[in-house]
Amino acid sequence: MTSAGWTIDAVELGLLPDIPVEHIYYQDTSGRTLNMPLIMYVLRSGGRTVIVDTGGPADEEKILRMTPFGYVVPESNRIDNVLDRIGVNPADVDLVINTHLHWDHCSNNNVFANAEIVLQEKELAYAHAPCEAHMPAYGFHADEAPIFSLAEDRIRTVDGSCELAPGLGVVPLPGHSPGSQGVRVDTVAGTFVITGDCVDTYRNFDESLPSGRFSDLDAYKASLAFLRETGWTPLPSHDPKVLEKGQFGQ
Ligand SMILES: [Zn+2]
Image (cartoon, rainbow, N blue to C red; front, top):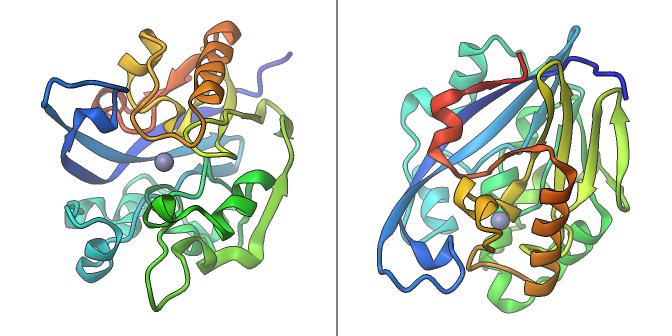
């Protein structure tokens, strides 16, 4: 396959502080905690900009609705300030890809008013009727529509692997959620895959270790095995090391 020479920027949209590690590493009983950044990926090729995942809300009241523990969005990490800093006009973005519809990955889809939003058909179907235990993750709260519905009229679903542009495609990575997907990005420095929560941190990938949050553990393990076989370089969803490097594929 010829490389389309995409570049990848990873930017922080907030921080989930002091997350117990049993949520991140399956059956971890160490009692430790980790800080997990919310990461948005910005892909650019030629004059085109594509966004992968759009983080959580930044307003105090909405934050507390999403998670009782709260999370932190400093002024500099609000999505409008982040986009400004990296030179992206949200109106120019014509494609947003959600790895899945948990609130910390899709809450700002509406910022990209002219974009088509691509996700797996299975994920959208499940997001409409999750089991009770999964409802908070999809942003369901008593008296209001779930957060993903903000830009639902612009969603286009796909079923399975598919190419979205030269050098850019999606692959199903079920297990963390029923319709989780990865985003394959070809660059001059090789092929990367934005993993969503199939891989929270590099350690999950290195040890083929699922997180403690899943809808199907066997499917999750199969997705991790698939990723390792591809030889693609993983870009995890919540690892601070991703942000330390910040730029990939150039
Ligand atoms: Zn998730």
